[in-house]
Image 1 (cartoon, rainbow, N blue to C red):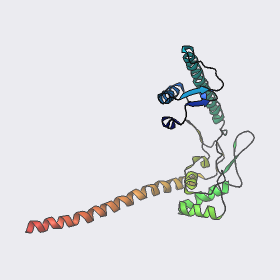
Image 2 (image 1 turned 180 degrees about the horizontal axis):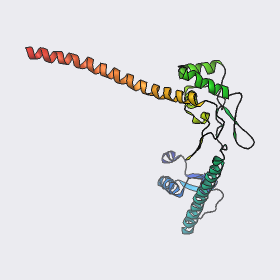
Image 3 (image 1 turned 90 degrees about the vertical axis):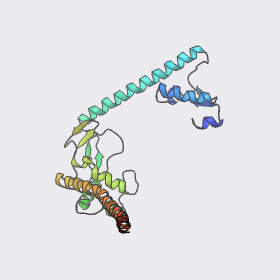
Image 4 (image 1 turned 60 degrees about the vertical axis):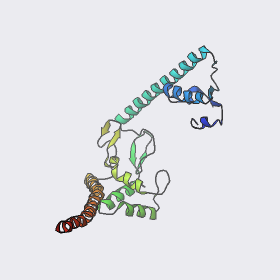
Length: 231
C-alpha cells in the first residue's frame, strides 16, 4: 500500500482505529510521512481527530496509548504462558504431531500418530533416507496435523524435535521429562548422531570435488611450465 501511494491510485487510507495502521508510534510516523509526501491522508473511522494543532496532540496520545496497551498485553500473555510452561501445559499454536491435548491442557500421546513418529525415528536410525521415509509415509496415507501431504521438511522437523524425547520447552524454560516421551533416549541420540554426520557429508564431498577440480586445472599448467623451461 505504501508503494502504491506513489502511483496516485488513492488519496486516503481509512482505518477502523489508528492502532490498526501500525505496530507502534514510530512506524506510524514513518509511514504517515511517506504517505503525506504523495498527498495521502490516514483517517480513522471511529476516532474524531481534527486537522488543527489539537488533532496532532490527540493523535499522538491515541497512538501512544495503543502502543502501551499492546506492550502490556504482550507482557500478560508471556506471563500466562510462563505459568503454563512451569506446569508443562500446552501454550497454543499448531499441535505437535504425535500428541493430543487433554482437558487440562497437558500433552498426551496420540495412539494414532505417535507410532508414526516412532517409525520415522526407527527407519532413519536403521539407515533409511528422509526421502525414502517421506515416500513411505505418503504411500501409506499419512498426513500432517494441517491435513497436508508429508514432505521432507515434515520428516526433518520430526527427527529434530526434542519434544519426542519428553522435553518441554518454552523460551528459556526447559523441563526434561515434562511430557510423555514417544522415542527412547538411545534411539533419539543415535538419530541425532546420524543427522549431524549426514549434514557434514555434503560439505566433505564438495571439498573433495573442488580438490580434484583444482588438481585437474593445475596439472596442465605445471606441465606447460616445465616444457617452457626446457625450451
